[in-house]
Image (cartoon, helix red, strand yellow):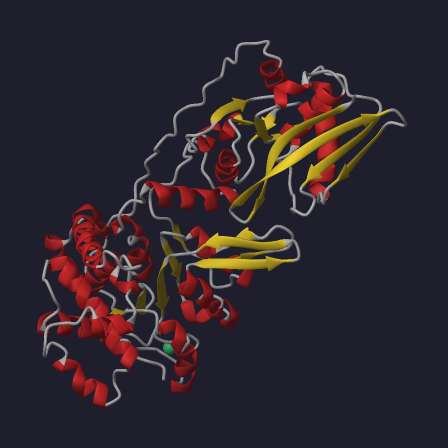
Amino acid sequence: VALARSRSVALVGVEGHLVEVEADIATGLPGFTMVGLPDTALQEARDRVRAAVVNSGEAWPGRKITIGLSPATLPKRGSSFDLALAPTILAASGELPPAALADVALLGELGLDGRARPVRGVLPAAAAAARAGIARLVVARGNAAEAALVPELDIVGVRSLRQLLAILRGEEPPEDLPPPAPLDHEEPVADLADVLGQPTARHALEISAAGGHHLYLYGSPGAGKTMLAERLPGLLPRLDHGAALEVTAVHSVAGLLEHGRPLITRPPFCAPHHTASVAALVGGGSGFARPGAVSRAHRGVLFLDEAPEFHGGVLEALRQPLESGEVVIVRSAGAARYPARFQLVLAANPCPCGRSGGKGEACSCTPLAIRRYLGRLSGPLLDRIDLQIFVEPVSRAALLDDRWHVESSAVVAERVAGARERAAARLAGTPWRTNAEVPGGELRRRFRPQPRATALLDQPLQRGQLTARGVDRVLRVAWTLCDLSAVARPGLAEVGMALALRHGGVVSAA
Ligand SMILES: [Zn+2]
């Protein structure tokens, strides 16, 4: 009998699916066939696996080899099946006891020299293997720490095919095992204390972090909009374990995990360029659907600098993830789902040439050009943004004066954490955790401000300066101001402040 089986994992989006790898060796002309929807990269696996087997001092069976991958309907891609293919072929040819592959799954690429190489998506693959009842997972040594984030699995990290075969034969004591514990590698984060001046914008950043509010920064180039946006992740609470695993899974599939830093514990920051395509922003691309910027920003911050310069279709594509917190990419092979719950920060110059802010000197833009430029940010998109702030360039005098009361990110993050706790306590039993998520209707029924606190809004509402949605945004921000200062319910002070922040000097295009 020349048949052997092993298991590996295929990824669809961030979902792993167990795959059975079957090798059948028959008499006949030497050949190698693969069935079960393999893509071109998998066909190339044949050459890699054969070279790796030979270069590891093993005998390549000179007969007819047929490889089956099932379920056949599952799309399979890339090189991550190498580590399963090689021992399965050797078991079928009698070089390895088939029982050695019984309750193990294998995932990794082989180099021509037999070296085991890390692959993408190991965390979601390991989670899927554990769910399917697999006890042991073999991965390349470079993936071992990431796989070890799934505690139910016994992880075997191997440097080479030679080492793997020795372990499977029970020959050599596995010298490199067990894998190292996950490291929590720290990197310096951009600190709020570096931003001088901009007291309103700094305050808005704190409110944005505390309430989960999307933020629109509007103002001249050089006013520090990017600097401010980059500091938002440092004000957000660290990811809890569940969120850290979600974020890590996306970055793993995208091939963006840094070596020696298997678990991402800080909210990510993703800033795509304004020339980004729809696929780059929300995911896709030919063949395997890759996670886009919105998913790489999951549980963190998505920053679109020069937002009006983005292609209209790209901005439009933001609406699905903003609404549902995920992206679904439909392909003939099936739908890939990626999480995409992020805080959006948009930045825009006041006009196409960028010089109309401040004193407006040297701006050559016509009023029509300015209207068109700002009009590219559609109403439905801006409707989701609770905070819209005008950021002015800071004068030297203001800088010097402000030096005395800048706060570090750590100080502000502490207030943010307290505010988030108060919001979570009030919202307990609802599907929402931050004020930004609370629907307008609920703000008028269940979470009402103090009586008469909204009197300030009547006039702008009657004059058409404020829409009903605008009122909702003011109330959401007012609640966050309460949470930041431990006030029980919004009063005139909070509503007034929220209204000022809402207007914040932003000129509406409409
Ligand atoms: Zn201009």
